[in-house]
Image (cartoon, rainbow, N blue to C red; front, side, top):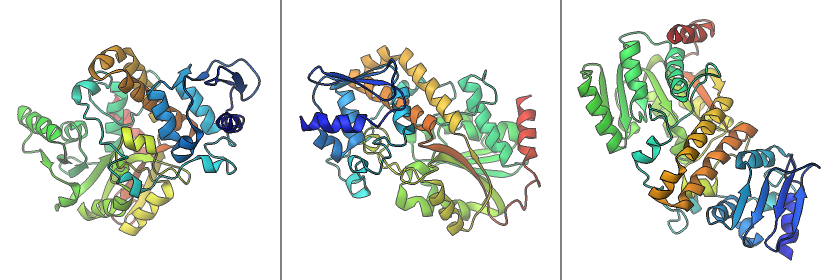
Length: 398
C-alpha cells in the first residue's frame, strides 16, 4: 500500500502530457494534464519503492528489461515529458530524495558494475551507417541521409580548424578512421590516429596500406597520453565522456601539450548545460562503464587550467537527437535479428537506451558541444570572423 501511495505522489507531478499507469493490482490512473493518453506504463509485477529510492534509473531500467514494467507507446515521448516537467521526480527539490546519488566508489565496485557487453562489429553494422560512426551527425539539410550527415560532421570539424595542406593533425580516439582518411585524402593533411582497440588499429592500418597512404597517415595502438609529437591540429570526437571525472584535467592538458604554439583543437563531446549531469547508474552498468558527462562549467574550467583558450562553442543538441532517433528506427527494423543474436532482454535494453538518449537530448537534459580551442591567444591563427566556417561548409558540400 505504501509503495503505491509513493508512486502516486511521484507520478502526480511528473508529466507534461497525459500518462496512464496500470498498477500491479490492476488499478488504473491517468496522470498529467487532462486528455486522452497514448502512453501507458503497466506494472506486471510490483517494483518496491525502496529499490527505486536506492537507484531510480537502474531499478526502473532493469524492471523494463525484465518485463516487470511494460510501456505502450513512445518511450522517448514519455521520458521527454518527465524531463521537461519542472516539478517531476527528475528535478523536484521536494522529491529529490527519490533520485539516487551515484559516485565513483560505487562505480568501482565489481559486484555492482558489470563490464560493457562485448557486442562486436556485426551488431553495429546492422543499424549504423556505412561509415560505422557512433557519434553525433551534422544535418546541413533535413533531407540529408545519416551517412551524408556523418560526413558533414567530419568536414564541418576540419573546416572549423581552418586546415591547410601539408599541416599535421592528431585524432585522439580515431575509431575506424573516417576523420583521418578524410583529412588526408580531401584536405591534404598528414594524419595520425591513436586508439586502444586492436580491431580498429588493424582495420585502419590495413586500409592505410591498401590505399598507399603510408607517407601521409599513421595509426598507433597506444594511450593518447603517450603521444609526444607536436601537431598543428588536434581533433577528438566522443572521447572526453569516457575518460572519467578524475581524468578530465589531464585530458585537456594532453591536448595542450601535443599542440604546436597557436595550433588549434576541435573537441566534440556530450556535455550538460546545467549542473548535476554526471553519471547514471543504469547507463554506467549496461552501456558505458566508467562514463562521466561533464557540464559546460567543468569543461571550461579544465580548458582554462590547461592554458588553452576558447575560440568557438557550438551546441549540436538537435543534431544528436535526430541522429539517435534514426539509430533507433534502424535498430527496430533489425530487432528480430538482434533478438536471435543476443536475446529479448538485450533488445529491450538497447531500445530503452536509444529512446532515453533521444529524449535526454530533446528535453535539453544533455547536449553535445564542439569546443574550438587554441594553444595561444584565441583566434591568433584564425580568420577574424566565423564566416569562414559556413563558407568552407558550402564549398565542401558543393
